Picture 1 (spheres, rainbow, N blue to C red):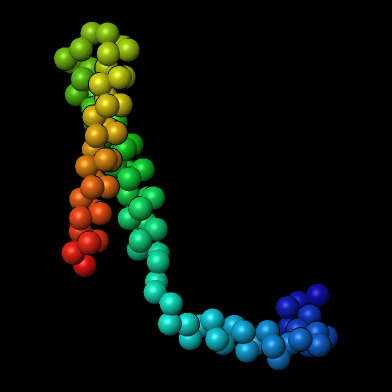
Picture 2 (cartoon, rainbow, N blue to C red):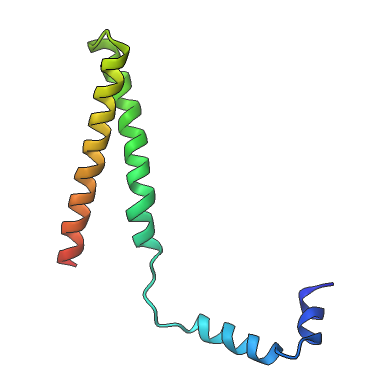
Length: 93
């Protein structure tokens, strides 16, 4: 059964169409960019900085635990710095 057939047999089909029309004309602010800035970008920063730190520290430190801990600390610091900058930027705008 297709969507069209379901809609034709439904007693609420006019209400559904009206609801979808109202949703498409919504004046609510778009949040996609904020979601990307708050969740996706910090994850990407963390992963990239962790990978780069591991590679750079491989030559400097001999201890595996030391490399991992240092790379983790640098990655978390980079994400926290990004979040502070983002918060300050949002206050201005």
